[in-house]
Each structure stands twice: as structure tokens, then as C-alpha cells.
Length: 329
Length: 263
Ligand SMILES: Cc1cc2nc3c(=O)[nH]c(=O)nc-3n(C[C@H](O)[C@H](O)[C@H](O)COP(=O)(O)OP(=O)(O)OC[C@H]3O[C@@H](n4cnc5c(N)ncnc54)[C@H](O)[C@@H]3O)c2cc1C
Ligand SMILES: Nc1ncnc2c1ncn2[C@@H]1O[C@H](COP(=O)(O)O)[C@@H](O)[C@H]1O
Image 1 (cartoon, rainbow over the protein chains, first blue to last red):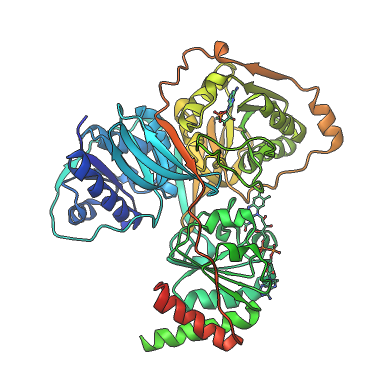
Image 2 (cartoon, each protein chain N blue to C red; image 1 turned 90 degrees about the vertical axis):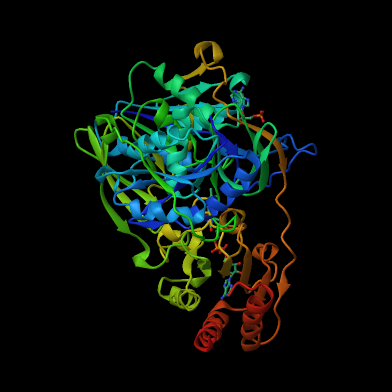
């Protein structure tokens, strides 16, 4: 085993997931402690050009698995490719983004490689006995400090927006091809289609700003004002479970324990009470704004800014103000 | 078809969690424990498959947990599972989901006959990791579909179409059985077991397995150790923006620009 660190650079349809760049900044920090080099690996079809660009983020070598069978994510072929990409440089640490892909892929590879794995970490550091990480438990109600046992491969996935992105600099990495030897058992699952959900509007996991509405919106049509505010902020629309279960919004927009867990820069909760299960999905946001008619609503306990107001009056006014701001910018 | 569901007992999502003063664990006295809501989706899906098809021979609920976890096996049996397998041994008390997956894989393999579908929750609300399902798939050498939002099993039970949630989209997949699926919210709504079904559940068989029954699991795969637990850092107190709606809107925008610097 070397002291090197390998970053799994996630791409879909040629676009690198931005959390990848956050993983690079973690990798650089860890490398100063292990004394090893930072490498990257990228899996897909026609991804050599992206691979070359990863040098700018600090990758010395980029291990590339480029194959028609890897065009779209499937757990088994990607697990095969990632395992091969790990075996080549034999790193001590592998970092992945804790995205849908990273969360799906990392446990499979960790089980295969008998690696230590910590998922969705908000801090990572090198200690004498292995890596120490912090992550949440009990749907964000508790933080846990974990040690990864140091005598084996250590895999860590990192939570979106918990770390700064590495700046892009100059650098041309050495490209190393990873041979892909798929077996028939790797082909048991076939991808047939990728279907956009939420009518093509930005997803809550993809936006830096999320505007959410609750049951108090009372109808799908009334969500229009939430969409307009989100649009003025170039953000995404989320919803409480009560709003989704009532059919005002699709389940894909639900934020919370049984919805999506997000950590945007700004979260605006409109007419959301702040039930513990909703907080589970958004309490890690950097700045939280709550708009609610009821001053005692628990959402105000986690909000940075609170407006005790009727959302049907305030939200359109906010949209106007933000539009003015854009107009002047 | 034979279906396995994997379930876990976790603190109720409404419960507040108190960390022990020494950070070694959480206060469990008086803590309400329930079947994980995502795992209930898996049980419900299995029961609905049986209601829709005539070829579902058996639904077996598996769990690893202390004696008290027998409660959630009863829940699954009352929802419609046929029997339970409860792996209960202090040797298996672990907060590492890869190890738990290895224990469950051994318990499932011990059945001898294989399952066509293995259904797990997308993740569990106690460890927030989602590692269990994919790792169990790996240990059982099965393909897995993570975060399933749609499932249609072919008439002959030999294959299925499914969809899984990703950022802003869903992947549609096709796969042969046997396979493992982890279930997202939205696919099914778990039923409340009726009183008669709760009574019937008491008569359904539950096998209890200990470390003796599952030899060779020495915990060597446990790659993580929990050092300490802490409450989350407190958020700053809420700053209430006052005034008439127009003023309020202007002031909030100013604060977000100049103070928080997020817009
Ligand atoms: C196992 C489990 C999992 C769950 N998972 C989730 C989850 O993932 N996400 C989630 O959100 N919930 C989840 N819930 C549900 C959660 O407990 C709450 O029921 C839900 O979040 C309530 O949604 P709400 O705040 O929109 O509705 P309500 O509780 O009805 O609150 C509406 C709020 O709007 C305010 N209001 C009303 N009118 C106006 C107005 N004109 N202007 C401004 N404010 C107004 C009210 O004061 C109130 O605070 C889960 C529950 C369970 C048991
Ligand atoms: N006898 C047991 N058999 C299996 N799992 C257990 C047992 N006792 C505790 N656990 C589980 O192991 C984890 C850690 O428990 P503890 O170490 O008691 O905090 C928890 O998820 C418990 O549910």
C-alpha cells in the first residue's frame, strides 16, 4: 500500500459532479499529512478529455476506465472499474462524493475490497492510528467521530458542500488506462433510460439555493409563487412531506428524513412547520430563512432569519426584490 | 417466488436523541424504538407483491438486533410476512453496516434455498449511511438497485423493471432475478397492521440465530470504530425581521446580501 490518495471523479454525460472538486481539496489536505500523491480516477465513455482536465485540481495521475459499457452508471460494471482503478496505484485512501452514485458504489467496492468505509463525512483528517472522520447519525440529530482502521484501504465519501472546492490551476496529469474485464455477471442489470423528474426544473440536490413550500400552500397551483422565487434566485424548489403526500409536489422534491438530505448555501422554508423529520433534511444548510405565520413554529429554532408573515403576501414581494437585484447586477 | 425483507429496529424519528455524558453512546432508557420507515417500505412492497401475484411462496423478515428487536419482526409478520429470522448475539452488536451486511448474508445463505428478491430500506435512519443494501448485494453476489421508486416484476418472476432515484432524474433498469433492491419513499405506503393480524403474527415462527449458528464471522471486516458522539453544534439564534411586508422583504434581502452574503 502506498501513501497516495485516489479521488473518484464522478461524471454523468461528460459533466463532472461539482462535489468531486470538493473531494480534491480534502485529498490535497490529507496528502500533506500522508506524504503521498493525489491521483484521480474517472469512469465513463469518452472521458479522456475530462481526465486531462483533472490535473488542474491536483491529480498527478488519472486512472481512466473508458468503455462503451461504462457510458451510464451501473453498480456492477462501475464497481469492477473502480476496483481495478484502485488496484493500480494501491492507495491508502479513496475519496468519493456522497452523491447518489457515490453512496451506491462505495459500499459495494468496500465490501469487495474489505476496506474500511465512512459515508457522507463532514470532516476528515489523518491521525496516528488511521483516518478520523465526522459524520451525522440519527438523521442529523447527533455527530459521530469515527476512526477508520489503519491497516487496510480506507474509503471516505464526503458530504456535498461540507468542504471548499479545490481551485483550478495548471497541471497536466499522466493518463493511465485501466483495463476493464467485465464478466457476464457484471451485466445482469441493464440501464434502459434516464428520465428527468420534476419537469426539468433544477433538483434540490443540484442547487445552491432551495426554496421549499409546505402544506400551507394548499394546492399545486399555489406553488407557482414558490417556483417564481426559486427562479429569481436561480434555485430549486423543495417541499415538505405533507405537501408531497397531498400531491402538490412530486416525491422527488421532498426534503427530509424520507426525502432528500441537502446542504445548500441558502434554504428558504415557506409555510413549513419544522417537524423533526423535515429538519433531518435541511438542518445542515448554511443559512436558513423561515417564513411562517406562527412565531412558535419550530422551524424558527434552526433558522438564521425569521419572518413572521403570511407567505402569500411576503413570497411575491421577495421575488420582486430579488428580481430588482438581478436587474441591477 | 421467495422474498426476503431486511429490517432494523431504530429510534422513532420523532424521538429526541440524548448523547451520554461520556460520548460513548446514546441514552436508550425510555427511547421509543420502531421498525425503520424505509425497511417498512420493503415489507409493504413484499406483501403487495403477494397480493398481486399468485406465485409468492414465502416472505421472510430478517433482522440483526438485541432481544427487543423481536418487536419489529412481529410488526413485519403482522403486515404479512410469513416468518422471521432474528440474529441476536452481543458478538454482532455493531454500528458498522458492512459488518451487519456480512452477518445478514450469512443468515440468508444459511436458509439453503435462495430468494428471488431481497428488499431493504434505502438507508436506516439511525446510522444515515445507506451502506447495508449495496454491501449485502456484494456479499450475496447479487445485482442491486439502490433507491428504488418503481418496480414491475415480470409474470414469470424471472426478471423485473425498476426505476431508481438520482439527482434530478430516475434511471430505468431491467434485471433478472435473483436481485436485491433498496426501497425509496413514494413506491408504497406501509399499512398499519390490524388487531387480528397482530394476533395472528404471534403464532408465526421466528428463528433466533446466534454466533454459534453463523460461524466464521469474527468481525474482522469491521473497518470503523466509533470514538465519540456529540450533539450537533448549536445554530445561532434566529434574527426576526420586523416591519410591514414590503419593509420586511427589503430588509431580508439586504441581510442575505450584506450580512449572510449568500445572494
Ligand atoms: C417516518 C416519518 C418520516 C417523515 N419524513 C418527512 C420528510 O422527509 N420530510 C418532511 O417534510 N416531513 C416528514 N415527515 C412528516 C413531518 O412529521 C410533518 O408532518 C411534515 O413535515 C409537516 O409538513 P408541513 O410543515 O408542510 O405542514 P404543517 O405541519 O401542517 O405546517 C404548516 C405550517 O405552515 C404555517 N402556515 C400556515 N399558513 C401559512 C401562511 N399563509 N403563511 C406562512 N405560514 C403558514 C403553519 O403555521 C405551520 O407551521 C415524516 C414523518 C414521519 C413519521
Ligand atoms: N444482542 C445483540 N444482537 C445483535 N445486535 C445487537 C445486540 N445488542 C445490540 N445490538 C445492536 O448493535 C448496535 C450497537 O449497540 P450497542 O453497542 O448496545 O449500543 C445497535 O444497533 C444494537 O441494536
